[in-house]
Image (cartoon, rainbow, N blue to C red; front, side, top):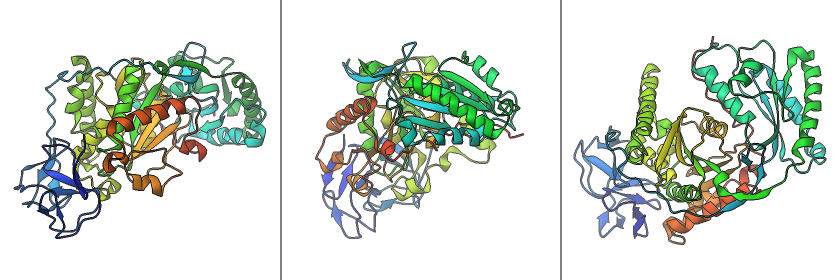
Length: 505
């Protein structure tokens, strides 16, 4: 719970050795029972509450976020000039904080598909097996403008999902496996009423083995198209338009019905974080995530490099030792992966994060983990793998938001919630995105991009619990068809970014 100590500052936890500036401060300003500020401090940045010697831990959120690299006096600005990351996470405490959220009854109006999966939207997708078929796919989708789509009012749109891979890669290995899992996850996604998969014909990522590996086959709702087999670009576009018209007719017959919120799967994302993200939007989203788990739903936390240093908070919530081991193995893979590429995971945060007041990856990770609430961690899965268990699952993904969200949607997420402190603009077709601002100032500055203002947690106009409930209510409304700001702006097509590690050949 945020404890406000003075109009200009707040403390996130009673044990913290820092305060957070709520507005820009100047040298000589007095805050927190006589603490005198010793220099200019931007809003969202940290002020030392006590003296720190070189090597001392600096504490925020009740957890170490790094060590002092220079002597720090009370009232000093703490940031990149005097603070660095240090490894502090204890990976030995497994399953010591298992808190199950109370059961809750909630529902939404969704599209019940054959097989029982439930969608929150009703798109027709044009997927591509390879970059070489991207132009054909885009031109097929572009044919169905608003005027033509008026003939199928029950369909949300026709969307082309293109990417930059599918050939020039090894026939086996992680890159092709990730791409195929992603495309298969989209092909079976319940937010699609119909899917057309377009290939070139000679690519490494052949359509037939892609579908066979996923247990899929062409059907009335899933069509395939080869550019070479069709007779070239123009002929393939014509064939594709005809196929999509048939899919639109099928998708248009779908209608919404009231179902349990247990059919919701929520992907958690954060981007453009600032010094307030871990104090307002992220923990408020965590409360909403717990409410969804209590209603029987599924929640996905991802971005492995951005939980680094705070993994102890997840390991303490691991439902079993196998779950904990799987998470540790993925963290160790990322440590090795970063080292092989001449980097380390402490290279995070980004310049925007730093400008907003986040100094170390530990500080960023603590805020990022807060999105997941307090529910037990029941599973760890690979990138774009199906998420099947109710409760909180961790999916291994990069920290890059579009790539991470793509994996979550491929895993089955039919909603995405995205917190931001700096003002990320993001959409995620076919899963609608609810964007949450960490401050009211951001919500006012970017009203066409922000769905929920979480700044009331700071100014006292709303409690954390009230904000979490409001987010949960908005998620149910979004799932039932209410448009998000990113949908109104027609965003979310360019954010399809499958993670394809490995060599380009």
